[in-house]
Amino acid sequence: MSRIFNVSAACMPDEHYMVNIDERLRAIKELVDSGKYFTINKARQYGKTTTLLALEKYLQKEYAVVSLDFQMFGAGEFDNENTFALSFARSFLQALRRNKDACMTENIKAAGRMAQIVDEERANFRLKRLFEYLGDICCVSDKRIVLMIDEVDSAKNNQVFLDFLAQLRAYYIRRSTQPTFQSVILAGVYDVKNLKRKFRTEDEHIINSPWNIAADFKIDMSLPKDGILEMLEEYEADHHTGMDKAEMAQLLYDHTSGYPFLVSRLCKYMDEDLAENSAWTRQGFYEAVRMILSEKNTLFESLTGKLMDFPELDDMLQTLLFTGKSIAYNPDELAVDIALMFGFVRVQDGNVVVSNRIFEMRLYNRYLSTAEIQRQRIYKASLEDKNQFITGGHLNMRRILEKFVEHFDDLYHDSEEAFVEEAGRKFFLLYLRPIINGTGNYYIESRTRSLGCTDVIVDYCGEQYIIEAKIWHGNEYNMRGERQLVRYLDDYHTDKGYMISFNFNKKKKIGVHEIVVGNKVLIEAVV
Image (cartoon, rainbow, N blue to C red; front, side):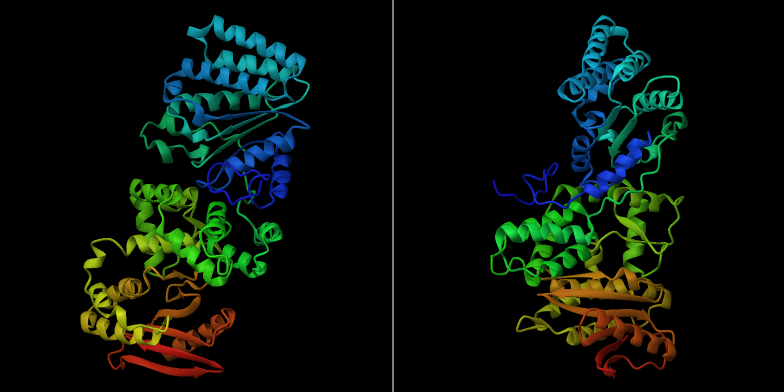
């Protein structure tokens, strides 16, 4: 059976093209060997379940692995301590019996005794009794037992779940005298140490999680560029497309930052939905980007839901995207904490940046599509102008800048400096979006983001346009900006770049002019 790119449920090496995660498994096993309890806390569709399934096989030679999934527990099974303890006991026993490496004679005997007690004490079975018999099984097992629980934040009753964690903690602390699990691995989106982000309750005894025994999980779960390249080499050996594998791996990594679902989704589009002669080309890749940005999927729907649930997150992301202001990483800042937990952002050089270009473009499209912002006069002007900027399939960026300057000066020339600094970039993107909508995309180059300068990268039909948007701070500052833009043009292997200067000098001369710096041509628009 030929392998495919998978975007639903866990990936299986025999069925799906996937990045080799052996190095990740070795690093996790070191935590298990050290007897650590820890949480794999990553964003939705980030490869948690795939990792747990692979880890279960990876550990089986040395450990008896019992793997559970709280998503398979019904809401009623979290109603109270009794129903949860019974459900957990039965699920644990079932998983133990399913695992051939764990089904040793003494384990089976201990499991049988536990099953008998569960039936006899059904109405009064509690967490204390559950852990007594779990300890008995750990005591007689020939192999040390590793407990793994996926979708741990699916628990419907937070107090029952926290009581369960408290028991794990108590046995962990007394592990030198009381038999217990070698390691406990919990996986979920919400940080188990910080459940208040999910439950949003004022009851302090509920939100203080006892999971303070957990070791920090610092293992990178993103897909590295080299790993993506190896996956593409396997695909190419099967399909002989003639793709430039190194270039395609770079494009995938640059746009996804290794987010597993996004990598697989883009590859799936190129494999299954595009014409063979163009699928695995640069143009085919950008078509796949356009397709993923236009679709509804569970990942994007989940992210949108979080923006509605956490207004502070929504406000922070709009500030990050539109103002060009740097946001320093502060672990105590609520919005930053939430954004990191859900995978919206990552930390780069001490600052918070949107985690990947796909998310950034999706967010821009969301924010620039609201009814409120599309009532802006600059957007209506773009709708009227948009048919004059495409010639022979190419974008006339100079003409776009000329018309933007004309409209911006006409509409906002009396605006205060603070307004322009806050809204200037937003209005340029708002003017640009109807022109390239459906064919092109744009994102902010995060490595160049600063208070006074933002590089907008526009992808249109496989061509890239680099536009530096900045606030005017004098000629010397402007010249530094020009030299900086030239360096970025070298990085992008192009000889022409664009600048927008929001200038508050009363003697300024608005308009668009061309300058030459070395072997580069810069088109500068002064607003």
